[in-house]
Length: 348
Image (cartoon, rainbow, N blue to C red; front, side, top):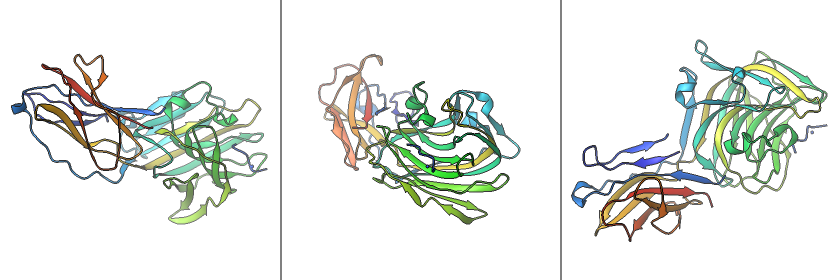
């Protein structure tokens, strides 16, 4: 996600833009928030009120409109996903004979183990066929840089930075519904229950992470009634995670005959994540010194950067830790004529 400010004497002087197992054993750190300021005489600039930061950000997708026009993208086999404009859902094929494929959307932030976040959605399966010990259908949070790497193989356990709901249809072992968290060091922690998701039944699935917890909670409902909770645990020592994407995932099989081919629909996604690390960004001169203020978040690092040509950037301030309050960064050594500025937000 990018938050930007553009100053100009010929347009509205302040504009903010958001750029936008036998139970089966399952056993990027930077974000840029640039804002650009053309440096003009003090008389052109004004001060702006900083409003309180929002406690959380909620993203919904009803599939009432074409999702490709709402930031959704496909990596891999485009034939596995079809938008149904009549029924307002996404028809999905999970086919492990294909390479890793994702229907995905950026979160606009980077989630870590200290963040609280959640996901809920409707799932209706038409069919699911498995080979040998089977494989999973997945919906959840990923790190897009990791999952698009050819070395990423979820079915073989080489799959860092994942927090997702998994359904393993019945195979040579029992069916299983899992809420799986995999940290950046590829350690697994999942909660599960050995129940099936029957074809033709509409399930509403909820999955959540509490700040600092090593795992995920999960509940599944039918017609508003609890069908199951994920009360069994496969624990592990978890370090940290870096998640930046929500995705419906079809994973490539492990090459040992453990396969899945399933069809169904996904609808009514609701994703809740913390607010962006930079909010309510403003800028002004104070005693001829350019400064910016914004509502920050803890566990992020912030640096004011400067450029004279919008191509080469240097640090204009020291790197400062967020304090979950209002943070001010200043350029005390600005060039005399013109400069452009942006704020970089990084996970430590």
